[in-house]
Structure formats: structure tokens, C-alpha cells
Image (tube, rainbow, N blue to C red):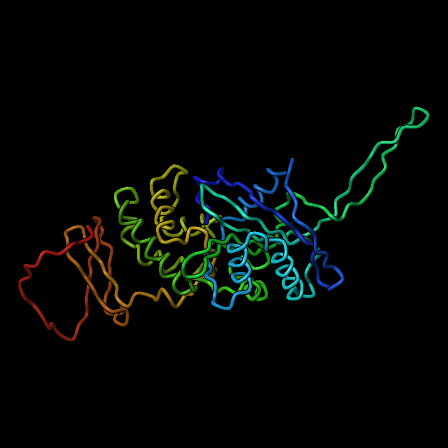
Length: 346
């Protein structure tokens, strides 16, 4: 949602937070504040939250309704955030932790965005040193109502852009990174833009497109089995996480140096498809096993056959190097001159 080249252009125009938790008694509604000397802390949290799964508002979204009211009348900001915090608190699951519901109005490179963040309280210990009769003692105290830098404290976040169609959201959910918890989806009133089958298919296409662009770099070891490598990666791995993409890259492309142009192209294609922050489980049915096998010899001879006839094709290593390919068949159906130009993998 917030492009990397604008990550340093985040300006907090307005800010408020309310205390929420698993019980109604936890709800404490507060007034608008200024981040003051702690501005950088909150900007860093927003920056962290900006890389998430893409969602779109549905027509009946309570969050969209409140944001549209704020857009029409800025004086509604405090009252609408209180309404949203109250709704969030009622939809909280019983296992939820006490924390704060933060809401921001942002200006990012001249564009109005909104941010909603659920931040858990974490118990931390503080100490003071007491000195008496030249003896120093440390006094330890527990603090529970805290903002800490720990990534685990940031439980849920949504960066929101209003559009003519309603609005789009970039959402992170630490509890369910690849799915988003049902109650948070219900609170936002949004649905995931891309489903698992779409994401799996798109990632497969991106991997193949990237490989073909860098065929010379990757070499025949990868390119001669590209479809199989992509298929195996999808079937063998649980899913894809852009922040931990090494297992997928290695499975498809083999070992890559950090400065490899293959990485650059792959990341660019993810951004072009707007899935650069999508965490998802693979839908293995979206990338079916290729029905046919395809071999091309060094001499340019092509052998294409259905997998059901694999037992009819036998490969034998020759003593002096090379291979003999033996095909057992009930007969030849076509034997003709072949004049059409055709792109071959050599």
C-alpha cells in the first residue's frame, strides 16, 4: 500500500487510541492526542504494518462507513473512532489480549491514507536504583500498560486508501498471517482481493516468466525442467511468504546470489501483479501436473508424449556418452515433412 520509495514520507496528521480487551470492562475510550516526542515510534509501527495482504471493502463495511463520515466532516474523527473501538471490542474473541486500538489519519507523499492498529500490552520490568547508607539496591516493578517495539506486540493492522469504488486495504494479522482471522475480517467489512488459487497460479506464471527472461543465466539444468520445478515447488511447500521467499526461489531457480538479476526481475513481477506482500497457502490444484512430457535432444530432436505412456519410452545410457531413446508403439500415425518454424529448447 505504501510504496518503499515513500516509506520516509509518512506524516501523522491525527492520532487517537482506545483501550480494548476480551471483556466489556476492558474498554476505555480516550480523546485525540499528539504523538509528540514519540512520533518516530508510531511512524515505525505504521511502516511495519504497511506490507500486508490486499483486501477490498464490501458495501456494508462499518469501517468504510465511519471513514466516509470522517472524510465529509473532520470533526467526526473522535466520535467515529470511539464507535469503531467499541465495535472492535465486542467482536474480540475470548482469547484476545488487552491492548490498544489505534487509529491514524496519514498523509503519505500528498495522499490521504488511514491506519488502524491493534497493539497488545506486554508486561515489561523496570527498575530504579535506591541508595541508602552507601548501599545501592535495585527496585524492580512490573509495567503492563506499555507500547513496546517487539514485533509480537503488533497484532493486527490495516492501512486504508479510499477510492471511488469504496476502498482498498493492506492488512496484517500476526495470528493468521496467510488468512486473516474471521473476526478481524468481519470488523473491517472486507474480503480478500486474491484467492489462494489465483495467487498460486499467478506466482507460478511469474516464476516461469522470470526464468525465461534469464534462461542464459539459469542454464539448461533449470530451464530443461522448468515446468516440473515449479510444479514440485507448489506441491512440496506449504505456501509463499514474500519475507521468506528463499525456499521457493531455491526450488525453482536453484541457488541465487544476493545481487542476482533473477531476484530483481522476480520481485518486480510480484509488484506488477500487486502481490508483493501476499502471504498465502498454496492451492495445489491451481498448478496441475503437466499431462505431457517433453524432451529435446542436443540435435534438436523432440519427443513429446502423454504421461500415461511413460512405460513405452525407455532411455539407455551409451558407453561412449549420450543416450539411446527407445519408443515402443503399436504403429506410426503421422510421418511427414515438417516445415513450420518452431521455437525449441536447445
